[in-house]
Length: 262
Image (cartoon, rainbow, N blue to C red; front, side, top):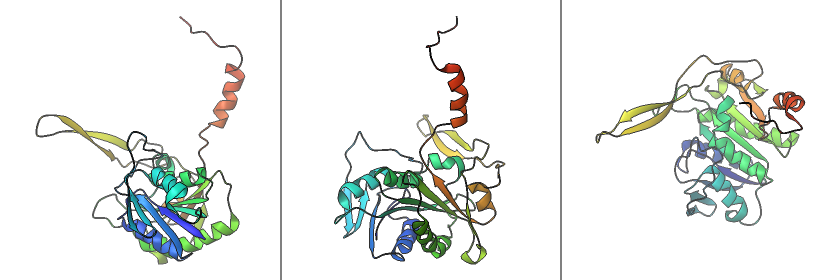
């Protein structure tokens, strides 16, 4: 089995080292194509207005000055020699990718690009207690359970228009006892915000950040599973259609084009 690994935390990230360990527990044929610099929050961004530079770091290791989507595209179409990968693994992200975060996550996007190119793909994230530079993610938990979960997922299989999003709780391996298949949750509050500051020349600039709030821990969701100390496994796809709203609109908007009311 040939495995391509990528991430959004960058080529030097500790989580990428953890993912290499996970991949090498499954096969010796591991290729690494990851961003040169951190691309957290890049979602499915594709570099279109600038050329992409690739730095070869080893026989099967490359750094790309682009996004996770760029990395997977270049890897599958050109960089991985001798045949396409059989599996794309993206992560292990420093911090959980749950609920609405999935739509912004570069980790999830790396897996989605694999799926788009016809390669089964899994995104993996290791939860943090708090998002601070001095807080270390317990990657040993992902390393301990990642290979077994991947092996079982490959045995079971999943639809070719979906990816699998795996989140490991912020607990030591011995404190994790269960895997739960979940649906994507929704926190129920807008935690993102921009803080305006002023530089030494009197010009405004902004730092993007997150606020904490009460989270909707609905039963059966990725959010609730991780809070309970479980490993969350969520199938995701990129059909953004709100099907119940579509059904309601079909009975009221179809047919003749409506005119604006004065």
